[in-house]
Length: 427
Image (cartoon, rainbow, N blue to C red):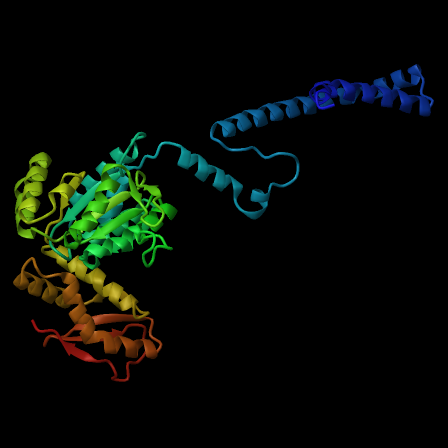
């Protein structure tokens, strides 16, 4: 019986035609229709034949277009809608958007380096060259179809407070990738590797994945940020060498190999700041020599040679100077005020206050961070910000008086009742 099914399926169109003919004959007999009456009926319907032919032609063209689209979807690994009933995806989500996302993921990944660099420059202050270089590198590496190691292994080196960590976070945001952020100062002991790569069977914690291996298993295309990498223990370094060399990490609890070929590793370091800054200033037009001398400077400063050998690029951040300090300080003050549930009035940060910050930064040298100076401002005006919020204010302005007193004043017309706290910033 099973052998007859394919033959019956092939004969099904012919059987349908025979059935329709027999049904038509049966209907004509039941209605006592003669050949003459059928001829008369056909002549009476003659004006409608062109319309019916046009409709049939349109349906035929529509069918051909449908089949062409179905073949195109099939080449992308997608399925066309079947039948007349609404598909479950069309009912519960945006099917077209889902199909486009799936097709985009299957195509070659490319990015617009100029657009990415422009977006990074607009957010990372004072590091235009680094933003352009890293965007170019990512465009080249993401376009590679055959790759046995991560998309990129980049070291961001330079003074603290210059935007290294912030750039890594912005990369994840602009590329629409998840971020896995690890503070390597907490990985200074040999046993810290278990936090990232899991514990072997029989040890405490062996029933859960490590933070890195578990994160990459769920988010294989993540940007992995390793902050202050030079402070990690050498045993932790060794675990990363496999991830960068062979394109996978091993989860200790299960022995499972988790791919890293879609990941981007970004390392930050504050080591050898003075030497790297001098090299960057001297060789900014010769990237090859700058890379070679930067590697040597990091090696002499005690950076692990096996890590340096596996870096794809080293990007040197320069110390902030002049108006760049003011820009960063203004953004930090704005973020601090917003953390209190308030907003800054347009033009609401006194220029004299930013000038004081720039002077203090200049006196303290490259080791100073604008972020630290902004924290001192927060200590001075936090109480007045709390009072402003309690009074129902939505917007404030930061004012510096001639004697150096800093005041957070309500900018939306709500009276401050003399409750604003005045603080003095030592010039």
